[in-house]
Amino acid sequence: MTLTSKRAGDIMIPIHRYPNVLHTATLHQAVEIMEHASIDIDGRKSLPRALLVFDEEYHPLGIVRRRDILRGLEPKFMRIMSVPHRRKLFDIEGDPNLVELAYGKIASGMREQAEHPVSEVMQPIVSTVDINDHLAKIIFKMITKDLNLLPVLDQQKVVGVVRSVDVFNEVAHLLED
Image (cartoon, rainbow, N blue to C red; front, side):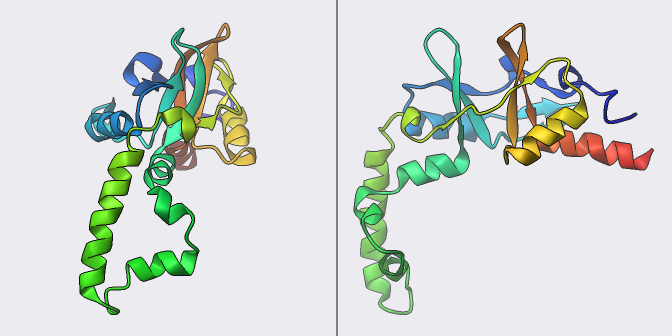
């Protein structure tokens, strides 16, 4: 195998097997989808780290990662605090009772934020690959654009995704040869 013998179509996960959401879905719905999703790759179970976000006409709009969801769930009152002040909320040595009070307020704030749409925290799609693009081109795009997930297009239509973990596995096989 060489870096040009494998194509995006060879290593992609077909779009019907990759979890996705509408841009109007709430963060709560996105969390539920991620919690229950698993992808079977040659008998191995893999958990998705991101969801594809589509519009109502099934056009890809973006990607929402776990960390985007966590950022979106941050309660409003914490967003205006300085980082040192946020740290004090979790300072167990200071006063354990205050920590318990803060957790309740944080959980309540997260529940409120969970009703916001994923479109508020999703990352726009900045790059795609063609189904016939070779592994070297996929690696180049992932590295230069700092991406872990690339939508795969066939005739301008999204047909799948390539994940960095799958690219990494292909590179590992290449090094074994």
